[in-house]
Amino acid sequence: MKGLAKGLGVTLKSMTKEKITYAYPDVPMAMPDRFRGVQHFDPDKCIVCNQCARVCPTECITLTGKPNPDPEKKGKVIDTYDINFEICILCDLCTEVCPTEAIVMTNNFELATYSRDDLFKNMKWLNENNTNVRSENSKNLTPAAKGGAN
Ligand code: SF4
Ligand code: SF4
Image (cartoon, rainbow, N blue to C red):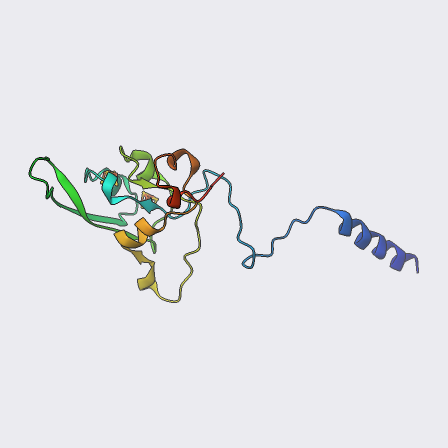
């Protein structure tokens, strides 16, 4: 009897405590800002300097440029930009080194899939991954791209 009362006491005490579990995935998890999630890429900001690909420790970034279609402008524009998330370790180095914030971190992390091929993300996918961009990088985004990492 004493043991039952003791057990019920623990249960009642736990019921009044703040919940430490989440109803994930039914309720999305809010990650802290500066969480290193899957990158957002803005092709309009990329100057094809190649620094992100050079600094990447796992060599998972592949990019190509093409001559600027505007004859008035010098330099290249980005043509293809791919990240292989099979080997990306989300170390943040590519975003740290990018001089134009063309590649920035988001708080998004859900990449689980049944196919390894699906982990190979191209420029279109990375561009559309525009929610929950890290707050320090979200100032220059379009309103639709501001996902509200905080
Ligand atoms: S986060 Fe790190 S591993 Fe992933 S693409 Fe950037 S530099 Fe490479
Ligand atoms: S994403 Fe940034 S670092 Fe990478 S090529 Fe473009 S401008 Fe350079």
